[in-house]
Image 1 (cartoon, rainbow, N blue to C red):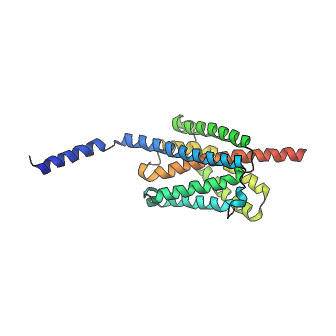
Image 2 (image 1 turned 90 degrees about the vertical axis):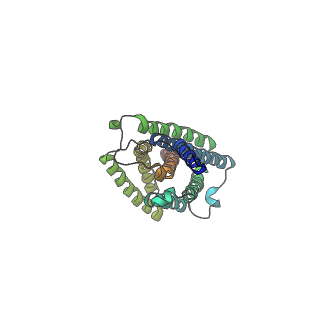
Length: 249
């Protein structure tokens, strides 16, 4: 046997050992979603706690209004979802993910700044518990009990359009009522969307095929943004309650 043949056999054996089965690849995909997603969430919460402790005036320090950062996040997520190459091309995808995380930390810092440390910690704990329950439900509960069908998808599309319209009205007019409606609508959307996304992450959405290479960064950022937005909604809902108490007094 020639030396080249021996090397070729060794290469074939190496490829056989290193290749993952579809099941192993998908398990790695799921683990990566939660590992990176929870890492981003932990970093964000840590920085927000520091902002709250140090009482850093984020609205004054930012050169642009927070909604500009939110628009940047929205545009990046649209790009990642609509341009497949952007979602799996390294390092482009991770650069975009980093921009999303940085913009989220800065925009959320403007909200956290106005709350006490105790409120921030309590809302983090509450958001963590609820988001974990919703994700676990999407991953493990019988699909008959979960949103994800045509009706749920249609509802999400209607709510998304409504959210965009209300958001434009709020930015244009500065209406407090429009902001209340926006945040309450977003809260309802998240309650529906988180279990749907969890089903997708775990390959339970029969009508949609999961491609780990294409969907990894999107799923990581979706898990991250869902958790962050849910926390922000909870924080904002406490302000609505405080306003009602003040008005009655």
